[in-house]
Length: 346
Image 1 (cartoon, rainbow, N blue to C red):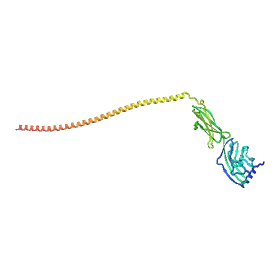
Image 2 (cartoon, one colour):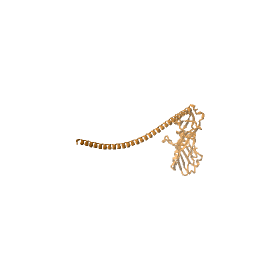
Image 3 (cartoon, helix red, strand yellow):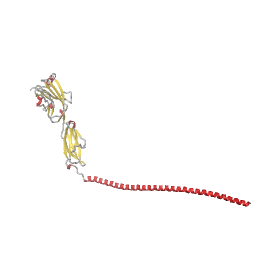
Image 4 (cartoon, rainbow, N blue to C red):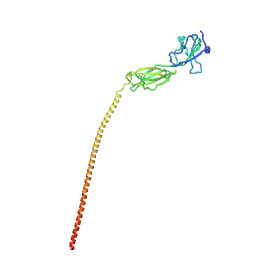
């Protein structure tokens, strides 16, 4: 069985590239894998008719240090795997499919690690008959998820405090509490920490009150990557604090007292309103009576004024008549005196 060093593989590939035409293909959608699961990186060669001399090389770009050469993930040549130069971190975790002879050169990567995330290149070379070369780039995104755990964390008032904790998540997730109707509950701020491996630990508390179902859900999700984990929890009725009768009686008593005060004030208001209305009525009657008296007084004054004018006219006429009669009397007296005087002289 032949083996090839990295130097000899490079020389072989370069010599073949000089005589072939290369096509580059970039996968439109990234592949998302969950840590510790298996994932398939898709790659296929179109118009593939003959597998003789087929060379397949899978490699990953060094994202942390682009100046360093790519890591060899898997190498296939002469109808067999040839992983002499395979990176140690991929040992025993890579394989190709039996459909390889049909052009399916997809890579199966087992027990995925967070460090496996990156851009993978699928390099295919067919020396015969047309010396075809194809390069496909596939982006692998690795996430870490786990089911959230719900526990009771005490009571608050008449409610129960629930705690949801999700460990070993990557990247940083979002956490929300939901009621039985899938409505988001108002909860405290999420607490986020990172463990020794760089994975996220998220906790969030919520205070819930007793309802028909007492069922609540903690949802943790990576929205952009469409990963969601949920845990449903049913709170037993006996876990909710018993409300003392005083807590019920005091509000009821306050409402009753307020009602009595409002009722008393309303009665007082109605009585005062009646007094005000009666006073307004009396004032109106007095005003009407005063207006009527003023009208009568004005009429009486006019009558007296007219009567006084008439009386004044009568007195004036009588005075004129008296003056006339007085004048006549004076003439007669003078005449008498004159006659008397004449008789005496004679």
